[in-house]
Image (cartoon, chains in turn orange, green):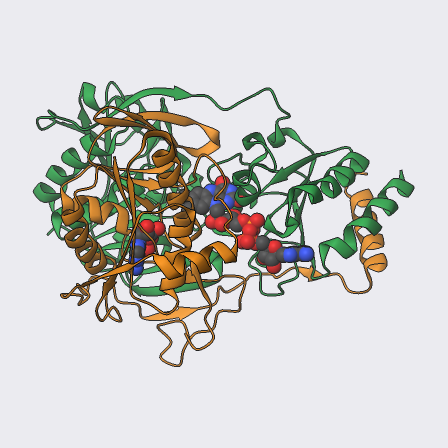
Length: 253
Length: 318
Ligand SMILES: Cc1cc2nc3c(=O)[nH]c(=O)nc-3n(C[C@H](O)[C@H](O)[C@H](O)COP(=O)(O)OP(=O)(O)OC[C@H]3O[C@@H](n4cnc5c(N)ncnc54)[C@H](O)[C@@H]3O)c2cc1C
Ligand SMILES: Nc1ncnc2c1ncn2[C@@H]1O[C@H](COP(=O)(O)O)[C@@H](O)[C@H]1O
């Protein structure tokens, strides 16, 4: 079983996000990038499948600041191959990324491609289903749990309210991961350091990264709020008193 | 290209999803700008009854045994054919387990742009999308033609419902052979645990709780208040609480009298499940956290400073 997992980096939402003077993009000066949480789950799911049934896990990413560290982290967790797509991604939209990843992934001939269901910062579609279409493969998203079954997989697809459908998908296929069967494993930094000395990042130059011009953002803005919360001021004691008062007033205490 | 706005109706096991009605309301607004009709597109097997309360000008209905359950494969084939034939101004999908399996795939297949996470449209045909966990909105002209995925919150389901059954045209399905995706079975949510949608108050915890041991603090507070503990997705994905306690898009929808959110940022997928609570109280150290946009009361005090005091005071107040 060969599994490919493209991983993406997104702004950390715990930090303050500011809009640049053009008004159409985030200011990247202080932006801290972290791995898309769902991709951490996709990597975990791939490694779990490999541990269960053998195979090879390839983790791929597009060139960006700090990407090498995330690729080495994946290797420390158990990924076998690391691939970095290189080129000018500054104007690449998701359609362009989908095509670029399709070209590189085609070469690997994987049985399974796991992406995150989505990233929180995109507008022009999602790379998982785009990639699937460019590769001519089926796509099933919102997946939390995968069982291998010969030339197909049974994916647990999540619906609202906790309903799950067991969906049979013929391989090769692209699955959009919502959550791995287990929380993503932790690796100690010492292990990552060790891997940095031995693991190799293969580079694949890609071209044709112009955006298809489908979606043009006119402006970005912070949500306009009808009524923001009334902030309870004071010490923890003061705030606790106010809350107790509120609970009593509303009849929950 | 016609000026009609198509809405792909989502339904599962005999029930139309609320997002479908919200999309009909969004389509109505877009149709004002385009001057076309709102057309509901319903795929299923013996499912025409689901069209009865759709606020659409007309319904295109495709019936086929292979459409009895939702699968990306069969839906994509049918929708690709319909969109090519009718060339609508826009096609709306839910930003959901169903719609997200379709919109981007069809965008690539048909060469039509797709816009994700649309919350509302404007009278002059702009999209307004919510991104970055609810911290940023993006606005732009909806390309023409376009596909779009819609998140809930922008329109109320009732706005897309009608007492009148819209006229329905049955359209024959294309060949649906060699499908690569099939539904084997559904697994029902576990009902052995407390039903958080029935609680008068919820103490709800998010990633801010930091680790499994700290859950005890939330339990202690909930016990003192005589209510249950619920959670956001990361808490459940870490295995700190069971799925039965999950609030949001993939979990339960709750509407308690008081929803006490501890260390929850207020991402749209979470808000989808608790936004209609009567009074939301948020404890979050980030003053810019989107949860404060929907909370009635808030504090930026660290929850680990607040909780021990609050637990004591609640115990004393009883
Ligand atoms: C398809 C899909 C479906 C999803 N379904 C759901 C769903 O059903 N339910 C759901 O909840 N999410 C869902 N999500 C995930 C969602 O996008 C968010 O990632 C999630 O809701 C974030 O959870 P959180 O607020 O607990 O964590 P975070 O966003 O990490 O927020 C943690 C917050 O805690 C605050 N904090 C930290 N320390 C403290 C402290 N000591 N005291 C006070 N505050 C503190 C921080 O300021 C921060 O705002 C879904 C995502 C996708 C893509
Ligand atoms: N630049 C990228 N590099 C690697 N993988 C990506 C990239 N963009 C998107 N992906 C993959 O596509 C998934 C969905 O992201 P998105 O399409 O941005 O919503 C991510 O979780 C990744 O698996």
